[in-house]
Length: 184
Image (tube, rainbow, N blue to C red; front, side, top):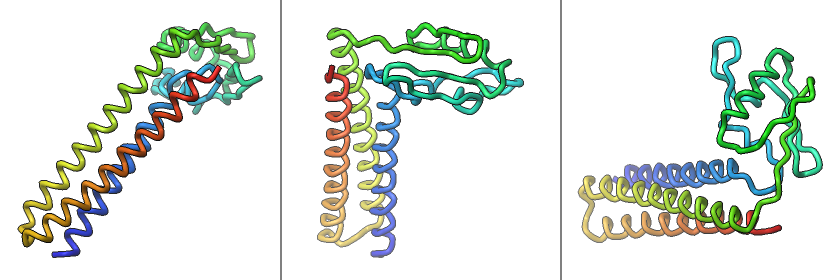
């Protein structure tokens, strides 16, 4: 009986950890005014009939902290990459120099910074909802086991501690990202 309980607790913790990691990865796709290759993670090109992320067909380097330089391994992909960047929601005009593409990130305005922090707060709340859903699933599993009342209460308390812990992690990551955006 306790082995099953331990399994539920372990699975719950793993799922909550994955939820936080997923949120942090999502945060990385938000432009902060500093160049970061992960800005291009969501952009794909059709390369030999297969949708392929840019980072698999090109090297992406940060130049002077505010510029990305994308150099395709195969020159024939240069135009495809340029077109994909134009079509994306990045809002950055690519500068094609015939060998690679430069993306210069403009400084963020105060208004844009505030919009981004609201977007991050929304993502953060979605992350917390995901954690609470994981808690609910774990609580349901524990109640189905049919433990004695004291053991069940204790197990539900352990799940709540995990939930509080991972909610704090979400808050911490949110603060880090918001501070990063608001820093000029």
